[in-house]
Length: 252
Length: 286
Picture: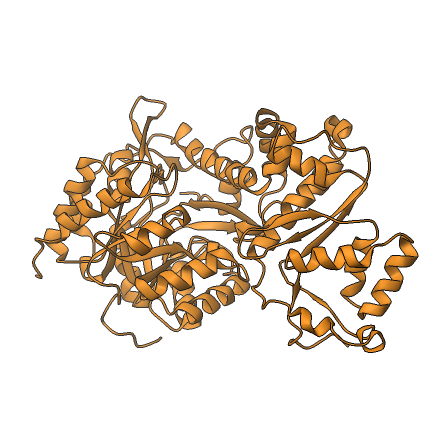
């Protein structure tokens, strides 16, 4: 009896045109026929369900029906690379970028990045709260202070109005998106991540904070955006709990 | 080979439910008959946030069973060492009463297919699965329970019955078994076998946990019944009857109600747990 290899079993799984392997039977020794389709359906449906959960904003903006029509194409071309389904779909933004029929909705890839960042934030490590008392020091030492973003804090910049589009995705009565690029910071005060619109220069500031002390990050932001409003940005970071405590080792 | 206790599980001999986050508050405040919960390991492998916070709270109140769905023990390829390390970390953190996995494969090469795929029951697959179980038990430092699958088809090349295959695995590896009586009902219907004969042939001494759950009904090309293990419906009466039949022969065991898709409100699942408790209560030790 010729064995059915897992390579043969896999080959027909995500491709309805590949014949079902021989050597698979029903309970009476006859070819299994459409019984094999149970596995085809299970795999495809479970991956599509995972994508629906993972990309709610893309699905809302594209329309549920369009999204669901697109999904079999994506999941067949990009099955998961790990048993951690919480990371599935990392390749979706690049897929959307390269998908010509949706070229007129070029912002969708950045919305997919936003959905991915929201999920990464949801599963990110917990972190202690930031104590603003450390900011009460003279400017010359303050400039050397390293502020740390919480692991759940994610910064995203786009040439599309991603914050307005996200609001529209979650609430169809939200105002029409403005025709401008936007940057956001996603923060997770307790367990539920939320995106906040960043003022001009603030994304540069936050990204610089990852490797630079406060003074240098401030200079970078002011160089990128002369009207950068430090006070407003700091208030947003404190209010949204974007920062964490100072007790961890700092990068050299 | 590790020298394990003869206990197959440290779960209480009572009722558990598959944990769903929407039931968190109900379980914490009105668990009814539920004494233990089971989680899917892979959903708790993030770094933090709500899933792990809920699990910490639940594990202080309930005995915990961790149920893996991603290890691909039946795979032709080597086990995923990174995934074994993640499991080890989760198990070291929560020290569950039981860890279980499936007689199935789900990984092929670099791909994870997110389903429990079937394997033939041959000498070659027996040797491979036994080696994988040994590796898992060594790596986790504990005995595991292996679950019988739901079958939709059979392999022409198989030379063992499923019950003989599982029995042989327990001898070769000292693993225990998780007996899913819904899977027995589904497979027996789909392959036109006797579910009771399956239970009669099953190595019940090795069973550390029993599952019941719901399934969907379809038909194949010939109009023959084709049941799908969906975990998305109430347990049907013939499966409850098969649970009674099993418990009468195994003696009391931890029993879990699984409901993974179209998850109902808590009162519905709690009623299923109550029914399982009523099935378990009169069972006398052998």
